[in-house]
Image (cartoon, rainbow over all chains, first blue to last red; front, side, top):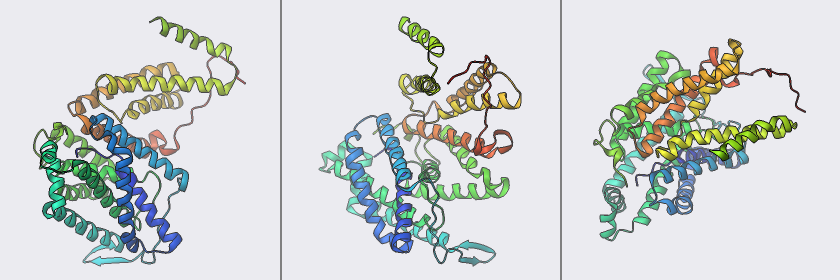
Length: 262
Length: 147
């Protein structure tokens, strides 16, 4: 689609609130919520595409940036009005369970998040690679006009792509809910990591993004060990700026990818 | 030119005529956001580069005024020049690094810059007082009371 969705983090925030409220009000475990929240977030993504993005899908990049930034600010403020700025926490019964592997200690929720994230990425990769719908998405991304000449309904493919992307972030949000507190602006810090990984891996390159996210995580963790946790975000942000300056197409991407238009 | 002269002439007379603190504050904020919008418009409107990192330059000016005033007792007039100079230098540096990027990539680079400065401002507690911020004492140069 070549649309950078700046409201991606806000869908993460909504998914985290969904996990939080179904935990506090209905007593549902966040991992049970996953079954319920993925379709809910998918529908949210689908409707947000049709309400907000469809009118500007053929507009210039700047218009699309303004639209998604506007959506992001609107969603943040809706959450602020509805649920206040207080950080809320999903305190599950297994909150403090620690798993030891050799000399390393992991939080159980973090391990589950890691495993499900790898599975979800593999599923998404397989979906894009082998399913017919995935083929349609890739064809539309590669050449929109040719795709529509081959009889692909590109409008539907776009809305489906958008909704699938938002549903993925819904999975991530529910997985994060037992580990991190949730507040209206929580999305930004996670979505920044996502941008860094995707640009580092090359836009539209799924395997590249997976490798890049491991690099970013290593930089963050080693950095916070060496210079202290307070400044850890600065390291990958500087890495990000450096990569944008030196190799904007990412480590594995083709040169000039950042200049390719629609 | 003449509409601008008329506008700023009227704006200069306003503090003499308007005595209401709330209304004066409102007018000052209108001009402040107007100036900020005009500054953003140079990059966003004329150059077509959508920057989401303009808060960096706004913050540099604000922090130089607050720090020079509270730590070194310098007049805001000097801080005005220092802040402008600092923001200019930083604008050259960020512009040199990011201006060959286009579209969403430029937006991402400017967001990253603003985040770097946000983290520096909130974590360098010894110098910037972190998230609490710096309280600048109200000390008007010429004693004039507003109701």
